Length: 473
Image (cartoon, rainbow, N blue to C red; front, side):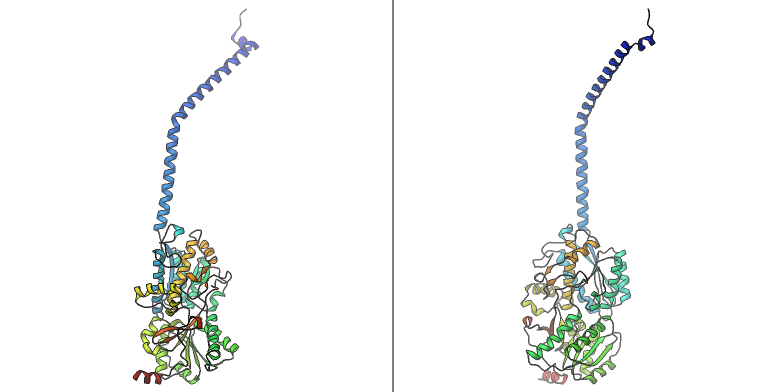
């Protein structure tokens, strides 16, 4: 009996044998494949390790180069100030102070300022800061336009400015819309921190505090010093945001302290002549003159006072033009005896060594002392640079968070303040203070508060005729 091929495969016995053979063949193949695979892996393993190592080297090289390029690329900050027009001398003085502050941040100095001892911003690859200056020309619309250009074209990550309160108001509104931190070191109109802005920060005290200091000063002169203080005030002020804000505060405080407003005289800084205002002032005497003027107009008024023999009991100025470097440069001894609110004076250096150390650097470079305006600008940049250094990233939001977290001690400032700490609702520094200075022998000397003063106040202000007689002697 013969079996066909079909019969053989149909046979349960042979079929089982066939399955067994096939399985063994497959197992043998898998074994062989496994041996070949293991042999291949042994050959490929060193190559894979080499490739992985090279990838890691390349990765770290890219990271290091990125960090290096980040540190080489400066961090840009926009600074908007008046470098032309009636406040140009103030703008140039502010620029000098900011330049010095930037050099201290970027260099290495043996002084007790934040960021002074190490070069650059240590938290961001020792990157330098670069200040991009723009001229506002004291024009609010121009200031707002400059903000937009600095942010969108120049890619600044924070802004500083603008001295003139009107310009600061417009520029900071634009920065708010574009969500960029705006630090203001030197505009004092109270309204600036009452607008509900979230990206605006101010280090200087405002005019409400300064005006309150005036009336406290008057009260202490009458009480402690037994000086008779007339209860008549003459308000003279520029008619834009800053001047009108000051006048509003002074009117309110005058009422609270029982003073009479003998005359209320606003004026336009662009006027060619102040003859009408001078006539009004002379007609309102006697009294204390409270004046808020920028650089050129302050000098013009003082020349007018001398020419017309206008002799108020005292001229008490709201800083600005009366402490600008051009004031004494143009007036010489005729600038003596005015009183002004301030935040800084060189004579405080005897009680605050850091102030003296920085002022010495400023004097060596520029041939003159700092003043309250330049010292505030210097401090503003130091505070902003410190916040950028502490920020978790170089983004506007991170810098804003860092500014809100600022807690800087007065020991690390050149200002006679308790420190810098911003109110989270308003952005106003809660730790600032003011002083009052008087020009004596062609120098600004602190006369109040008494614990910082080394010079006695001269009251009343000597008349112009008596000054001439003394000069001739």
